[in-house]
Length: 567
Image (tube, rainbow, N blue to C red; front, side, top):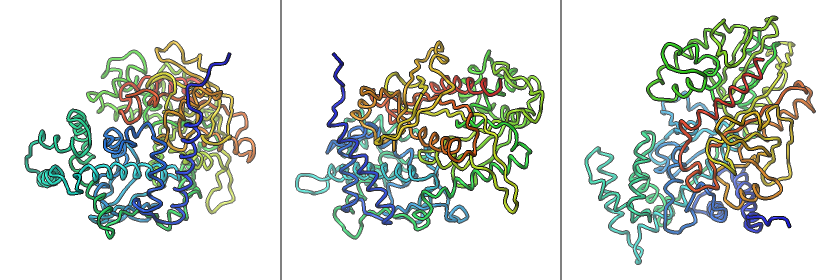
């Protein structure tokens, strides 16, 4: 007898429908140009988010308890001071980088924002629809929690409680840099947030530990203040709008094309464009460190292998040594391309023909090419975000038409190597996932492929390894337990969920099978490490980052990729 699934099919279907409604609504609002969070459209978004009950937003559905971990998570991804702004406008790159406005960059999202005045903020959206949907989801959650604070600030006769007035006084003192009793403030917050004293103290410390975040006293007061104005003074309604330029450019590869052209221009200028190219999508430190950290730090840091040096570099005591590694990399042919296109995807190019004897880690099995013209070129691109992965890879794999010339160059791409962070459905943070297919969430679209990596190759390193399909989701912040259980326990038997894989594979298949602009026999290598397990309490993204625990899986994957490329 087959085992019954542990998920609820009806609840999973209801959740998937809520996700689809959210994204259809968001796309409609983008086309329309504006909406009010307290209006019909804003309330529809909020209702669907409540139906969905995403794991990352914890107690969003509780009418009184404010979700503290979720708030900390979204404020790390939203510009500082957004809780004070009645008007928020999403824009493209429209010249504000040349203005006197000081850019505000959130600690966990590479997007620039500009505080126009006391009531309005502009936020640049240059990474595609996924970026827009991501911020709208976070804003909807933020407003939902603000509404709770407003309700908690009222007594049974709809009069503002004493705690609310006392919090206003504390926020004033804090703004002036004057002393106040934190213990008393925690007590007021406990009432207004619907949480225990201990929970409030822990949350306040988390906010205070990040200098790029306002205090929880400040955030709570201003979220409640905006919600109060929205509810009681209709002339003070909150509003989110989208610039004309954003609506025109979204979905048209505007920034991805500029980005890819800049890279190909450098490859041509450096006489690398006809060489074998290996693309790696990863962070901008692991490849450089794996190649050069042992030689650069041999006399400065104790270590036996790449992993030892990588762990040392992740420690505050050795962070100053990162520049030592970068200098050796530059001396050995590394070219850094800072992004000026707006994609926020930096690039490093490594010319292996310029690697000097003894500079490259022996662990990687590097031997100089006997034919310099055939020496591999390694192109490392920083992480894309969601749908931006299709735009960037699609443009990168197109032939390079040299401006103002009839010259056309096709890139000789020999391998594409994708290392990603993903949510795992079995296992814990830091474990590995080696996929054999990508499946788009909510559709029947699927992309099987031959992975040059196998799970068995990564075993024996002290980390659990899982194989199977990866689900490419519309947004990690929109996943709930029932949907995740469905992917794990149904016949899909998914290993994990992420946001870019199917987008990358869609671009690769178009280039290799339809456009014929890329080598049809190029090697594909996908490997993911678990940044969270949303099915395990305390292991969601809102519970904090991997930190040092992410070093080992990151470098195990990096080393394996480089060994394949360099051999």
